[in-house]
Image 1 (spheres, rainbow, N blue to C red):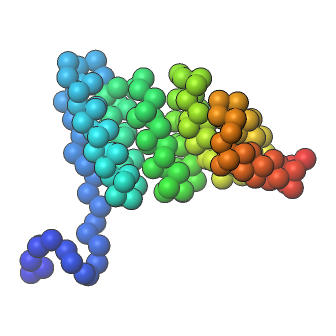
Image 2 (cartoon, helix red, strand yellow):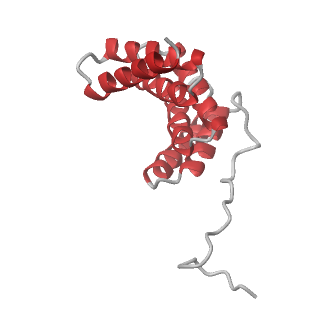
Image 3 (cartoon, helix red, strand yellow):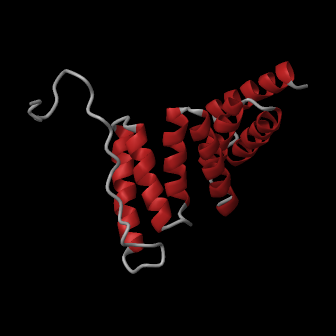
Length: 161
């Protein structure tokens, strides 16, 4: 047999989805505390560059407390790292939802802009320009926001203007 053991070399272990709390809904007593626990784990997973685990843990936190913009932000950040088209769409969706809930959440505009630019469609690139502008309104001296806006504008002008 294979003899489990904690893997050193060899093939990576198949990804096992973290266990959620199917016994709870967002209405359950204890849902918020559980969500906070999943979010803490998600943040650790992100720091460990374990993007899929971060994504899944954040999803469970969101399911248990859907109105918490930080959870949406964490899932979007992980989705942006995974970069598949499906994930970019999810990152955009989560980020738009987050900035619609909190108009002062600059990072939500930034993540939405990054996802929208990466999706590279006429409508999404246009949104990216607007979202970078909004992020800059909130944080006018931010160098990376200025660069992001310039990048989005150049893409717009090169491909769609």
